[in-house]
Amino acid sequence: MEGASRWRVWQLVDSALPTGGFAHSGALEAMAQLSLVGGSAGVRRMIAEALWQAGYGVLPFVKAAHESPGALSELDGLSDVFMASHVANRASRAQGRALLDAGARIFPDDLGALRERARRERLALHLGPAAGVTLGALGFGREESQAVVLHWTLRGVSSAAVRLGLIGPFEAQRLQAGAEEMQAAVLARCGALGLDDAAQTAPLVEAAGMGHDALYSRLFQS
Image (cartoon, rainbow, N blue to C red; front, side, top):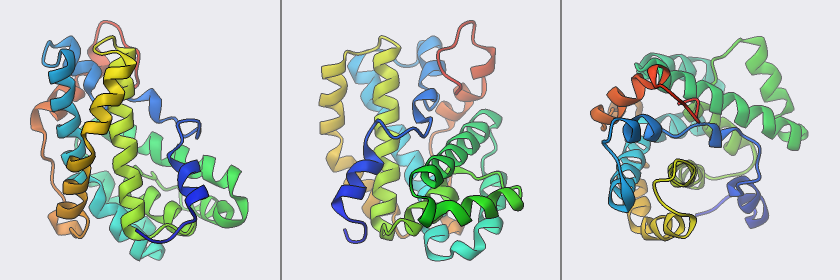
């Protein structure tokens, strides 16, 4: 990978970065309450679903926005149409906005104008397009940007699994370490996909996630 300095890479993947990602479980909470996920094996399957879904459903938008930041408004609109689930759509917008807002506060010289543009154009700021333009403006290469998004996806699911009591923190880290080859496979298979290739690959997860607002009790926003 090439692009941003290693110091900046570490800062952007650090869990201390206040982007609001930990408010979302990626439908894991709904899956758990429906008894569709349980224990280490279930979380491992959920991680695989989440990574491949991000590969096919998010990385094409990251790529397009990274390569054509001037087309952010159009790409954001396409992402809004693509995200059919109202819960996933809401989560994508919340995370994209939080990413750019935090980035503009931390790196105002690099991202201040971009945030003002997004506000002026009243963009939804879905995560894929927002990550593409934000990370690109911070010096990340295309593949670097996509790898960061995959890392955020994996970290979000593993962290949610711990807080939901499905696994412990050491097991979460073991699963995260064991997902290295899968992350590489997703990046290799999906990194160059165009917008016409974007697809939903986890219909059961999406269907369960759509019922998140109806759960009896909730720790997460999605």
